[in-house]
Length: 368
Image 1: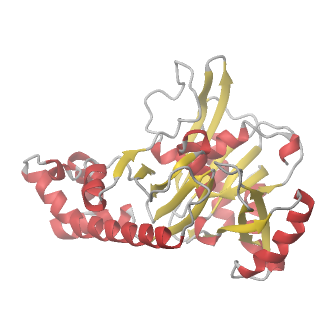
Image 2: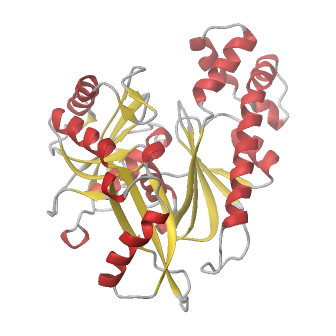
Image 3: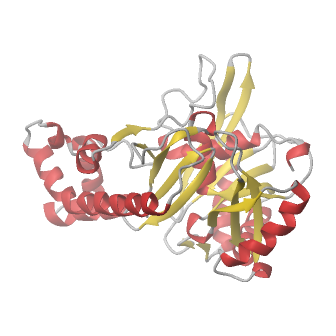
């Protein structure tokens, strides 16, 4: 997490991916929080590639337009909590001997060079000690986050060009977990899957911290292309068929349209399940769970992102992986007022943006 100011200020959340950006502004009400402003805009191919900004001028224009045309209330603040690309962020939990906070700071900077693939002077580095689920450990678990300076600097420059003031930048996985995991605590390890247009983010969370992340190169775009090619329809119609029929055939429903879409989607979904299983196995083979109250491995997967609502997907993954698979609730840590100003909007694609917006409602000087 990268902090640029030391003031208590209200901010909105901005999640930037290769294909779209999403804005969320929350406001406090007597019964909790509600979405006061939101927007989503497409980013054309080539503007951002694998998290790297290739056309700063164009992206700045899109950000400015999305900000100015936000639905709901006009956004008054210029302060923004924005995402950094998961592909360019290095997250690692390291174990350190028990020591004072002052000693820990210098020791982590020295130790982290063994874990990140870039020289320490080429990255922005942040870390936090993880409070254990149970006491009595003989070490301190520390979450270290490092992002190349040239990547961070390009995002800061772009945000400033759009007329905004970057208050905090953090990786997509951190904001996703803030939105999805109740009280940001889990006694047993779980997986959050963010199913995006260009990739699927695989995040393992355990205790009070992210433990492992990976970007799986399987996307909604691939799913649409598979349906398009096998059913010989254009991409636009393929997307509509996917939304209409889903993969409901997995639930035993009979229908020509449903069966055709399920068959066309099967190769991509089978590969996705295979990749998820591979990384679950990798994590469980290398993880140490002595700091948890639960000694078992991963039992649950939470789905979020634009592809999470694919009809039949939770059942498909549950069957293939023999795990509990649920649609995540991106408002689980944000008690809402009875009347949500955004109405019946589907906010699963806004999960990371909601996590960023939540951070924007709780910026305290002592945390900067």
